[in-house]
Length: 239
Ligand code: IYR
Image (cartoon, rainbow, N blue to C red; front, side, top):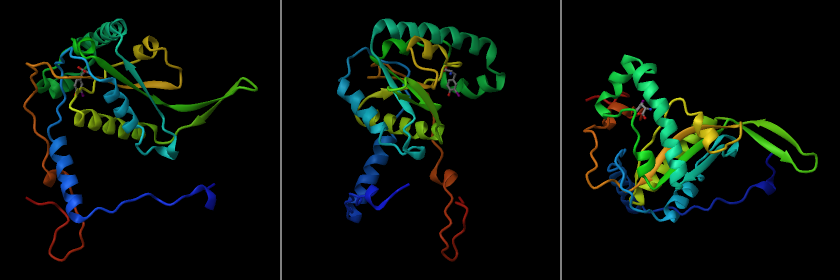
């Protein structure tokens, strides 16, 4: 229960309209240049960029502020190789047997296949785990109690979006990779039973000859609907 003591005044600086527009346009222009990259250079990356990105991700809103996430960072080449090898076993099976033709057709334009060299080439892998439920350990009794997490999937999705934005603005390339199934990550990274792998994010500089598929994003008119209440304006975006 919140009491008057558990609140304090919001720290908020109101920007001028000019500052608002400049900040919002700048962010949009920078984010429009983000691409999912699959060809990484081995160039080293300042670890603070990784730490800052994870710290940024942890500013995300989450259900009941439960922050149901764990970010595992791997730069150890031996563990990266283990992850690549295990991911490729699953991915080969998926591409050759598990995925439907409809699924394969849907991703054909991305040019992906079961081979995942980026899992070793990128200097860092960030593996995000979702805490399906919380575990509180009582050191006195040695007992563990579980508690429910609310909107965990949505919360971790929001945090990952912020993580990707931070890494992009820091001049780094990222890839959201979801090998399927991902259970091997819990084993290799020794994670507890309440944590489930959510996504693997290779991070680094793009290889000098990196290629990306020619894709486009939907226009605002296709994705935004505005009920403005203004006379003569329609609620559909129209052409
Ligand atoms: N997980 C596989 C397949 C894959 C699935 C989707 I949906 C993509 O957008 C891209 C790839 C892989 O990582 O190759």
